[in-house]
Amino acid sequence: ALRWLAGPWHGPGSRCAFAMSEIIDRLARCDTVLPQPSFPKFKLAHIGFTHHGDFSRNRDKTRDGHRYDSVGICNGVIRAGASCVRFPWDPCDLERMRSELSEFDGYIVRINPGQLSYPGVPPGAQKVFDDLMDHFTREGKPVWSSPAVQKTMGAKDALVKIKYLSCGLIDTKCYYDAVEFDIGFRTTAAFQPRVLKRNRGSAGEGVWLVWLVSTPYCAALGDRTLADDDVLELMEMCDNHVERHTVKEVVAFCVRGASSRDAGTWETTHPGGFFTVDGGGKQSVDGDDGNDDREDGVDDKNKPVSVDTDDVSRSASCADDVGAKNKLNADDTNSQTQSQQPACDQPSQQHPPHPRTVHVVDQRLLPRIVEGEVRLLLVRDELFQIIHKKPVAGGMSAVGTLIEQPSFYDPDCLEYASLTRKFIKDDLPRLKDALGLRTEPLPLLWTADFIPMDDDDIDDDSGQKEKNTRWVIGEFNCSCVGVSPFLAAANGGSLSDVTDADHQRGMKLCDLMGEQVVKALESRDFLPPALES
Image (tube, rainbow, N blue to C red; front, top):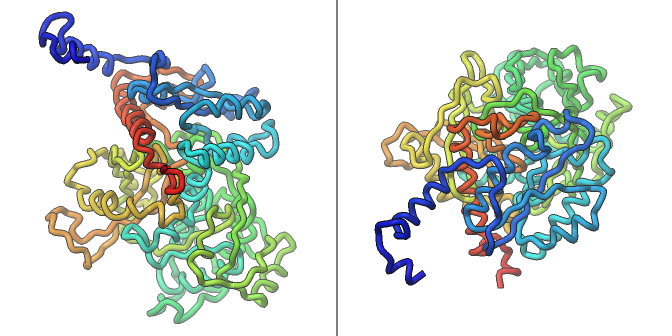
């Protein structure tokens, strides 16, 4: 090293030539996993899963059976000085999985939600996998993203937990059973337009905008509740279609499903039944809990779906009206059995460590949603890119084909300076505590989608167009966010199908991921306080 520092600046063996070779190596395209370092700083496993015998279950894979962005992610880690191998998870050989994985220093999990619950996979495979990842976490090894992070940030009731941050809405509500929903929704919908979000969904499916059209809104929350015959107008965010139903029909649809008694006739293809174990629908396996999680915010229409079977218990109910519960359950023999636990008001009880699959979030509808959503794409705590997704004319949904061409911005752009400054500096340091994830590492690759709202109380001297705008999070995506420039390699393709421009764009993101992996392992900043020593 000293000889190199003292060496000449020019010529074949000069420092300049060495630096140029490093730059060339960085820019050179490689469609296979690079050779592993001889002396790696750390050893990482990129964990994937391929369903054998059914191609429809592997649409996120290339023709060699690996996820389409796996080469890029591994190479990003390798170029940062650590080793990273693609490790195929085999749920039929658990002893070998435990033994071989224990040799690694950290884990990048790239198994989409639902893939370990497919038909043909051993029952309980997801829990076995999660238990092993939790074991490594307790040993002080980082898992990106850990089961706790996926279940908590991927659930819709994360919006309730962050409501006291500047990126949250203070009046966000969550219903964990049918009685809570029936009572609460009739009250909130009588006061102002609402957004209903079932816990699991795919590209806007099961997300409804709701307006009261039969009577004026009441002046204050709680002044009145809606009757069965009040009329609501609803727009489903997966396709912007509009329906009108009575309150009685809406409650029946959400609680027991579109085919249940009193639900009326619905145009949506979604079966409803939000308070059943699977939430009445399917979820994507190419995204985070079925959400649109690609970097560019554009849906892949060929992505497969599966039912989410994770059903983690919740300890408390925030409403306990036994009379209403008995009446509601008597309406349909297929009604979901409800929690018999008493009401509680303690924050620690309201926010359990692992959210239950069965719940519906109720938020006020922000009128400026017509301006679209702004997505922050982050690598751990570093902002990589900003994407603006604007709905097509006449629509309000910012998913899939329902948006105009997305606009991309650098992290330090002036257009969204107040958003990034407020979230990165103020909210992000408090986010894990708010979600109950203090001992967990932030996801390696994740997104947060923001909706603008007017706020006259903002003290902002930036002079930018956002001066009187506050940005509210609509959802997180963190389980398996895709590196979308490589998407041409999916559906049985190969990286040779990816253009040079897209390959370079994808590697820019993967290189940052690799740098952040090494940085985390060197600093050990992901460790809970008890393990820091």
